[in-house]
Picture 1: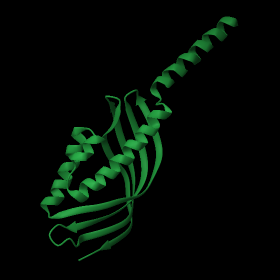
Picture 2: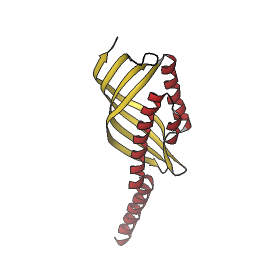
Picture 3: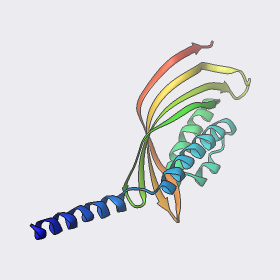
Picture 4: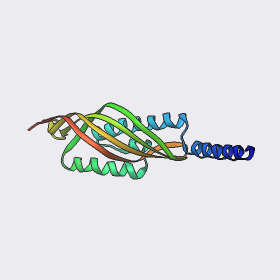
Amino acid sequence: MFQMKKVLLVILLMGICICGCRAGTEKDTVAVKDTILKYNQLLSEGYAKMNMTPLREVATDEHALKVYHHMAALGEAKIRMESQLVNIEFLDIQFPQKYSAKVKTKEKWDYTHVNIGTKMPAQTVVQGLLYKLSYELIKKNGKWLVSSVSVLEGNKSSDKNLK
């Protein structure tokens, strides 16, 4: 009986060690949230200023380049996007490995496409666009970086078409 308790205790402790190694610390959780908040701020500023270089502070080079291409495509159409994060809710934060994180958020955004030449709203003004997003982050040189963002769900709550 004593031997059985000892074996169960060892199994329990191994499980705690394995889970403990995979789970991020409170410090990591705060850092990941801060990274996503900074990412959204720099993303919004990048689209407004037509310059995504500062995004590299919180995103991998590969991901920043992907966002740059989208911004450049808007620029070729003579459109600049002005956006504002209205609200963000962190739904789930997981650390599947020591240097990776997966985060699900629910976000509310307002945005406007502005004609670069006339500085007037072009096409659409959207208020209250709701997204469920999935972020993947990696920890590189002690710093969390966004490596990808995927839209899980998107829903327009208010859409005003401008001509």
